[in-house]
Image (cartoon, rainbow, N blue to C red):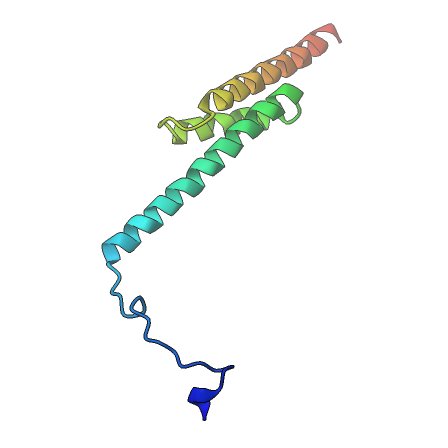
Length: 108
């Protein structure tokens, strides 16, 4: 009776279910996925470093973070120039902060 039921048609064998997956291909796929995620994170972190460099808040902390971020990623990645520019801006802001503290201490 089930074979004639239009709501429950007989299932045909699926040739893809019997396919054997090569573990090398699986490892290569996982490696490519990790690389894509890392590239996306590098790109967004570089943009964040640059944009926060324009503002100047948290400059000493982000100058150190930017330096560590760039030293740990010597390979080229998208928007690396923005990361370098943002880190330089953070160091400039930090230098101005230290200079203003020293000037106020000397004046007072």
